[in-house]
Length: 115
Length: 113
Image (cartoon, rainbow over all chains, first blue to last red):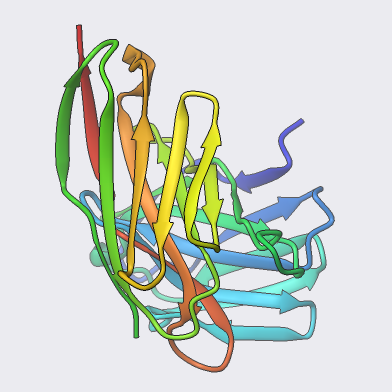
């Protein structure tokens, strides 16, 4: 079984709809992240959480919200989807130690199309 | 903030050696990562450097010079399956008080037969 899973894997929605992307992990990591990736661009950080009670905005958080329901679960919501949120979304996890243990491990991604 | 530069595209021949460069500017540097990403798939971890020097792992090696803000990923004995995007990512202070990973835009490597 995959260590980091994302649901759904593909989603088509319409402008103005609210949608939620979910991420679960079995790696036992404290830290979880949401990124988006647009064609030809690098990964951009949307939100991150270092533990259940800790939520932080990344560089492109506008239009998004998150919820850390448990250590293993971190969901991303688009309250009112717009076409420029069409992208590939990745969830990632990492440990909280130093010396490279903060290496991030990625889920398979959710391809979102907003019409 | 953080700034990362890497070439957009590179082409090499099967069996050859290729070097992908990455330059960066950051505050609170805490390591540099290389990831491989095949089209439409998740990035997968290749290497981590925090001290100056070369880290070798099979056909892949990664080098870091902290004083120059420079790293490279060296791929030897190229195989067709190495065709992918290679992402350079730097751990440092981007916004707020916590270190974050900032990713470069990736270098798309095409391996030709």
